[in-house]
Image 1 (cartoon, one colour):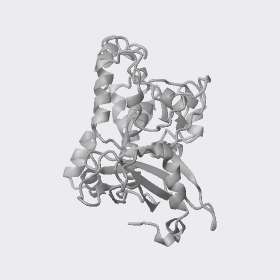
Image 2 (tube, rainbow, N blue to C red; image 1 turned 45 degrees about the vertical axis):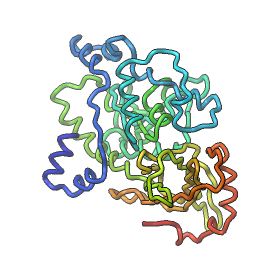
Image 3 (spheres, rainbow, N blue to C red; image 1 turned 180 degrees about the vertical axis):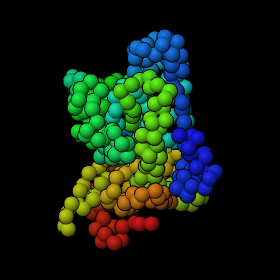
Length: 368
């Protein structure tokens, strides 16, 4: 992937040039180099050998279990690390990756595994006692879209004629090559859900094949199979909306502002949806923000301590290989200092949605 992006950029491929000029891309070759060495030294014949690190810890069960904070009824729905009470000492690899996640304003990511052929999306951990229970996140529609994007661009992942790893019938392929993680099997302490609940990042898990140790002569075909999916998935970083949140007086960026989204897409000529997406993102250090969304009409509501809340309407279309819609906010200082948080954002939504702004004609929605 790195070679393809660099050589295509230098060759002047217009699509790749446009992608790299508008996207910061981070590649992590392996989170578990010790496990790779252990499995290689043992002949790479047993998929369980090398799954854990040198301390015999499965790193994809080692992250703070933020799902349980949500399932236990937390009022907060994002950036939950402040509520974590660790019951074990995390591994150095996990600690390093957590630092990378929290230090960088990632928008979209994927972690890659072997063992099956499917795009897996949150939540990964079951809400109840069932080990195979569909556990829907607030952004279920967006995650399904992202997983389907990868699977549909892969020649075998979503192909119903692709056999399963252990049987002639591939249940995943019969359903578009995607699965909710917990519906497959419940995983607590995984990196996928941690990204979503600890940061602004949306992450899915890609199972890239039945063979955990593909032979050298098969790698060129593996790359060919995943090339289009990887590039299209990176382009999905530009789904939804993005922009700057600034102080209206100084023009300086406002860090840590909370961006809440309400889906108001029309269901017919006279009616709209009225669905809050109960997962907020926050602006980065410079006041910039990104919010992944599927096509539709939305209210974007911004609140920050010391400022009056502000809401705007936007219509998202996600045109192919274009940047996200730009939607900026200039926040006015609050006249009375209040303790603002999204636990009571509904009172603001009710006030704003009954004002003249909510009933704008469709043609007046913000477009760019």
